[in-house]
Every structure is written in structure tokens, then in C-alpha cells.
Image (tube, rainbow, N blue to C red; front, side, top):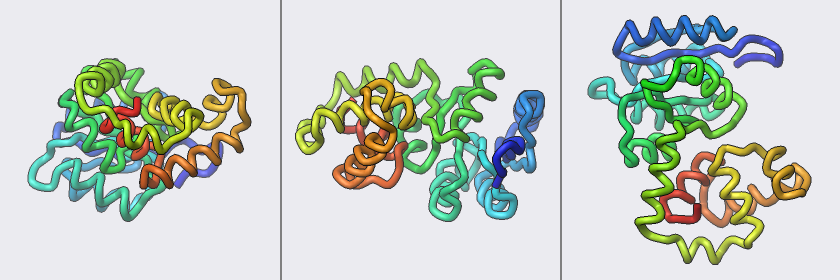
Length: 215
């Protein structure tokens, strides 16, 4: 993993070589280092294990061992690696499944290349990165679907406010600034939210919140 001040180390996984080459050029122009490339989920797992990159960028559909399978495996074995899905699928189910499997971000392949680079950097900083069109679609889906009243009632109003900001990708400092509380206090709220929702990460909390209609 990268030490402070060193360039981000990235592994690219996509079964289209031309797309990988385009992404590599954009990321390297932004100061990152592409330390490995592969074409399927099995290579993603092996490269993540052997190279320990900061960020794994991968497609979802790449044959029998999919990007989703790779996400689950890497999340379990290398939880410090941030993963960003870059794919053509805008299906809500794919977005939620990818985030639940451990992805820190979900971007579409028609996203502007400079925005892809920004998204990779944001994911490396621990933010949740979702294409704006997808984020709105998820909210629309929630409004039309089940409401999470049971879970809502188990969270205090302040915890609900923290969770909403987490689901929007805000870090502890930004949440504290928005709610006029210290980052340390935010951390305590986040810990309580994890316990009440039975999740282990900010991404899982955000996915859970969207699925049950808390945000």
C-alpha cells in the first residue's frame, strides 16, 4: 500500500484492452501509477493479493468469474483495498450488489475521463463515489419502494442525519461541519450506527440505508 505522499497505486481490470489503455493514460496523467492490469475476476483477485494496490478499478461482467465475485473475494481478504466499479450497467440492482460486495464506488463508462480520475482519488480517500445519475435513480427507487420504519425508529434523529450524510459520501470532517459537531463525536455516532444496522463499513451502511428507505 502507498505511504503518505506517494502516488496512488492502481490495478485495472477490464476485458476490453482499449478501455484499459484509455483509463491507464488518464490515471497516469493524473499522477497515479498503474501497477497491474487484468481481464477477468480471477486476475483481479490474484493481482490484488500480489500487488496490494490502493485502488482496484474493475468492470462487473467479465466471464464466469465476474467482477462481483472478485469484489466479494477482495473485500474479505484485502479489506484495505478500495474498489471502484466502472461499467456500462446502470441497473439499480447491480449498483446495490456491487456496493454491498465491497465497492467504494460505482461509475458508468460514459463518465467523463477526468471525472473517473477524480472518482478513483475520492474512493482512495474513503469516500463513496456514485455517478450522479445513478444516485438520483436510487433515491427515486427508494421513494417508490419500502420504507425502513423499523430501522428508522432504532436510530436517533442525530444518527439518521449522520447516516444520510454518509450515504451522500461525506467523511467525518464534512459531517461534523454540517451538523456542528466534532469529528470525534461523528465517529461515535458512526460506530453506533454500525452496531444498530449490523454492518461493518460506511459503504455497507449506505447501501443498507438505501435498500430499506432510510435515505
